[in-house]
Amino acid sequence: MSVELTNGSPYTVLSIPEWTGFAKRTEIVVENCFPREGFYGYRERGRQDLAYSPVVGELEMYLLFEGHDLPFTLDVELGCSRLLGVFNFICDSPDELRKNIKQYCINPSFEKFRRMLYMSWRLRNAHEPKSTFLFPECLTQSKLFCYHL
Image 1 (tube, rainbow, N blue to C red):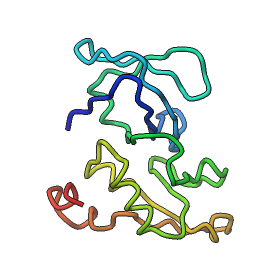
Image 2 (cartoon, rainbow, N blue to C red):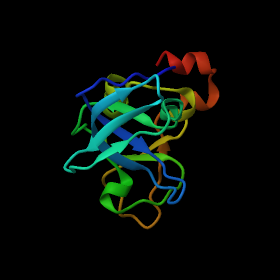
Image 3 (cartoon, rainbow, N blue to C red):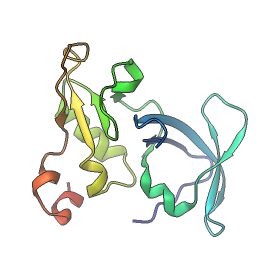
Image 4 (cartoon, one colour):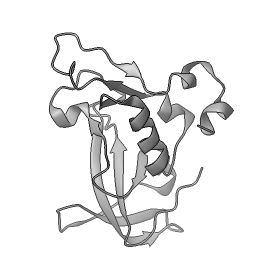
């Protein structure tokens, strides 16, 4: 699926930088759109300097959401990250989290949904907290089924 960002629009980007392995949230506002040239100019929320997105084709590596202040929390934002290479959310209502992801995500994919986990707010500080797959059907069902979630 090709992602087209809109000039002046706010987005939230979830990524997993290779150098850390932990999920990261970045809130941006697109300033300049150059899809033919293969990049977008944006500003991170609260910063003045202009940055440029990776090549448009590489945007598929990230989870992109419309808007800022989205109603979910990553484990790394609370300093309790324990898993590398996944998007590990903290919540007590996985159904509500699934609904929010489906509502705001503009580039859902089977591969990304397979990398989404969640753990309970109550258990986040436990010695051995347990994370659970947010979309377990993506582990056993076909790609076509998961794209229609």
